[in-house]
Length: 128
Image (cartoon, rainbow, N blue to C red):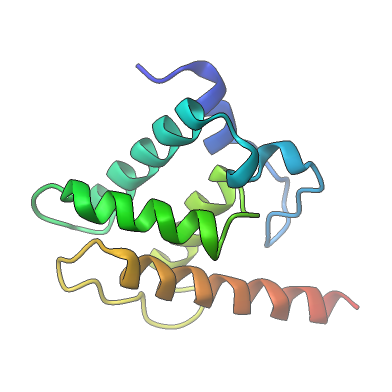
């Protein structure tokens, strides 16, 4: 069972907004305690794999590469925002869901998150 704090971070509500807009830097990936970040990412990776139809397990080397990607290029997003980005990709918010070809790797994660960031910027521009 995951610590309540991890589940709270992953499932943190953000209201009826189309995007997550957090101003609290403490919940960004780069600022989470390593144990909480690792547990949260493990939970999200497993959830994404199941909901996206991946067969088999994600190799440890891919988990390490994805974590490295997240902590370098996407370090300011939260666990909840990461979870949300994959949810809206699966649900087709920005066209066809990203093809994974049964490979859960850094390339797949980067494609989904780049699409999410474009989506997020578009929502912000429509608001102003």
